[in-house]
Image 1 (cartoon, rainbow, N blue to C red):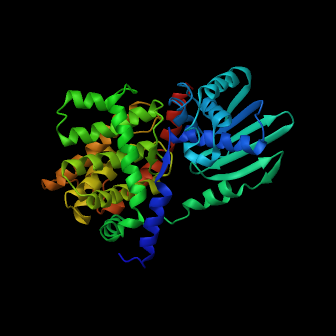
Image 2: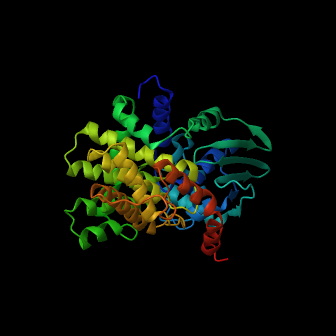
Image 3: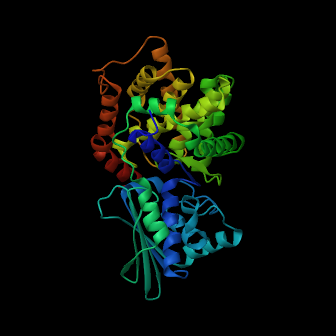
Length: 427
């Protein structure tokens, strides 16, 4: 693929759009971001707050710890964290710098002030509005479709524009993803001038490795990574790859304050996509160039799968990420389009039924299972075994299988998603 090709530029842009740092689960952090922006527009501390959130956001915020809040959970905590201590200029690292006085102020605000949460009626799968009030004054910030996409800001009923965060951020996700294909992804990874993407990939390696290590060392969530290492052979790269990715998720879901490089709007997907590839590169003594190109494959294969599924659904995003990791690992072993395509299809045939029931410690176990499927998908092909078109939802051709998975996640599981949310809300 030549630099002059439209696809080349598109893939570079997609990587820079999708790979960004975030601290904490991205749904509560998006709420905190909106809260920080709303307070900035209001110009003072509000005396009451009203958050409107779509069901999928409610699902993903319900059970996860909001970092830097003293182990608080929920939409109310996320909004107030952003309002009290957030720096909107830091976007998805909005509450990365919080002091003890601010944590005390959060707790006092939640105790003394009205903070109301209601379901959004917009019909948009990813939609939230943070409304803040001070006396007769009112400001609101709406984020829709993805985590940084501020679509509307109002003050006292009048629409206003905040140039840096409205125009600039909203324009960051306009690259067409419909042109993506596995064959082109592999071609791009082989031919890209690595200097164009090196910085963001090295940040992914540094951030995601650090939180994975913290997940192993500390007592976070269900400690899935530690359980894997103590229950099976920790010297087995297949075990380590699963364990390290799961450990990063456990730390992140339980409020660890280390940042993660997200993929497709998700830190868990960022971890599941990258950490197994990083661990395999160490095991295989791959040089930096090989690792970076393998990460390109892993990230772009994950993004490609998620494009037709959407940011939030009943389809567990760890599946797409584990499959992406399997593709990256295959690349490290010298596999190219043919081998990677078979790895993807094999892996999707194994784990495409895992559902998303919100962000919480069990995400770490799902990540381990998805990474296992990605690795098994490669070894199946290596040993002359594969799943064929007609085996369930698998159809001939990797792009056709990915298309079926997109249909399953975005259309087929729509009612499943609603039922999961009803169960989680005790209805």
